[in-house]
Image 1 (cartoon, helix red, strand yellow):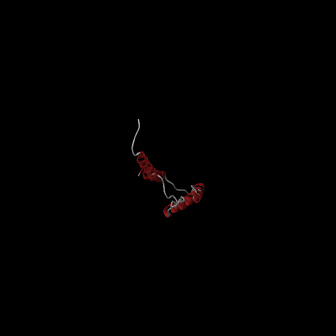
Image 2 (tube, helix red, strand yellow):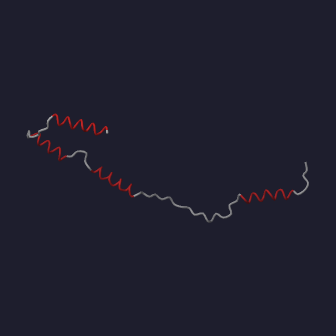
Image 3 (cartoon, rainbow, N blue to C red):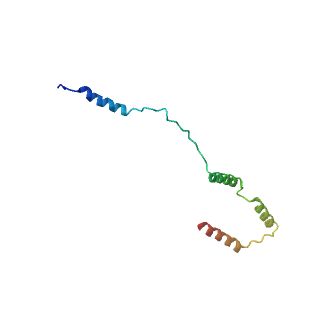
Length: 95
């Protein structure tokens, strides 16, 4: 099959479309660097967590005081007081 007529005009249309997809000026693009910022509240939390890690789990002064009282028989801890404190601690944990 032969096509007669204005073939250059048809190919000219396709060539114009190719130019539309090409990037003309890429020199205006500036890359940015990644940055991280920590809020002041997060910094406060970090400070508190570090301070809590330094606090011992056992209060040695209380243990020594109670051990001294127990060894000298001057410790007066009734079973009722101990039971009340145990029950209170259980209730406080559930709430």
